[in-house]
Image: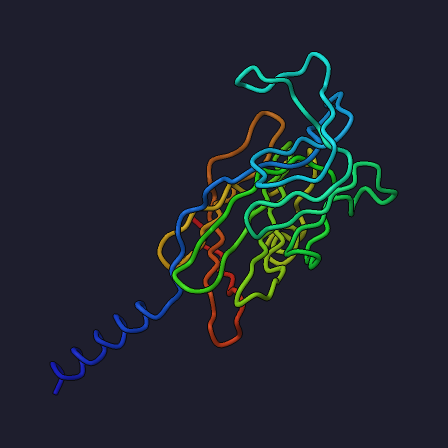
Length: 224
């Protein structure tokens, strides 16, 4: 009887694991934003499939490959099905960049420079990660499933729940998130602390796992 029960349990665990949504590792597809203290006249935008903005050639500024640096003040850029409406001169700079689907933006963001990553899944859910790092970090994750866009994760809200809101620019000892990685059915975000003399060793990680019952991510904190 014990052998039968054990075999049934093992089959159930394997079945549940197989049913859990699996994620591929993030792939960087572009960047957008205004680098801190940059002398530019617009946003730096890289990797876009298409960009309706008018390019401005920044005098004396070059990319790593030696080509002149172009910036953009206003327009719509997109990376595959991810769209971004941006306005460098927006009155509300905290909402000068918007992300989501075509004319369906679910995340309003500030001007800060961001790396953009794409995470594919083995189901009809595609995720996009926006990661900013400069004496603090800010990470957002939005996604599209069956044509519907959602704003899933904001690292500032995670900091409020798990770290008492100890997350700020040049705040000694504040939470500092690394770029995410994926491990099977989990998206893993390591975290450490920011200090004036440098960041600490990794202290733990935040694990995101898709909950099919509620069609959202569960959040788990793992302390090392």
